[in-house]
Image 1 (cartoon, helix red, strand yellow):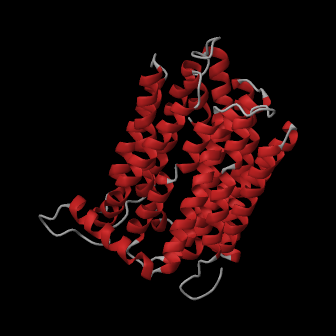
Image 2: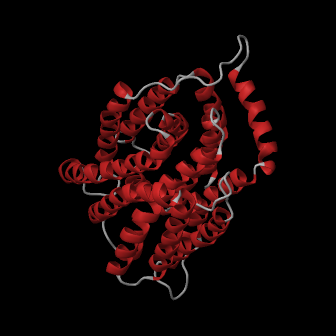
Length: 389
């Protein structure tokens, strides 16, 4: 979806900004509601039920995009699909502690992220074949079948989780007659007011927010950057996602092992530095091999490992029984981190004198500012035992 949606919408509108604005709006909407998801997960013990519903909604909207004939309908369906997918992540993340003891969570998280990127690598050849067989010749038709294929694959590979992953036990039951949304709102306000007293958690959430802002932008900007800076077509862009996905999958597993061995904080910082280097090199590179090497190797490790190490670090920082609540805030940061995406979408359409595709390059380089600020915050985080791991 991240690969295809930007190119597909631009085939209708001719500009980048509408896709990035829609992406930002869906992330903000899901982010504002995620704390309620965290409370519902902790108090009902039924995260899988919510997760299944949101998965089905995501898949249905993906398939419907293939049949949509106007840019505004495509954007509306994308809004719902992206909202429901991102809103589901708190329920997904809250299942993580049911799968392994704390000392193994880094490895399990790394395997999950690694398999996610491996899934992308598996899906890319399928998408390429679908486009080659069913895609039209013009920009409005070429990528149309990709969305139906994505929705179908998403549903198919969600079945193991739906069928076999155990339900999370409720840690705190809600008293009869008490509204979970109202209780969630009160508890979120209490948690936010208390954050300054929990400095490590506050610094982590702020730093993670800034780092993920740059990552979200890099993911959605990858395809339009290849097309507009290096002149690749849609099919070539799809193929060049394959080495990135394979590298990220392998390196995510390595990142999980490093988190368990050296600590999630140190591992997260190393990943952020790699992303920073990748953005700087990619933003100025004139040679496509230089660009792709930096994005695949440095970006692949950094992008996947920030997710892996960040989840383990949060679990180490928060008290037992409050995982869902804090993962709600953690994911709020992910969804509200749209500053970089909006900036890229607006800057990319600019024509800078003397610099070919200068707007795209500037948009990518702007992400280094937020990422650097985020790394400073993560560097200042200390674990409850006082260590810097």
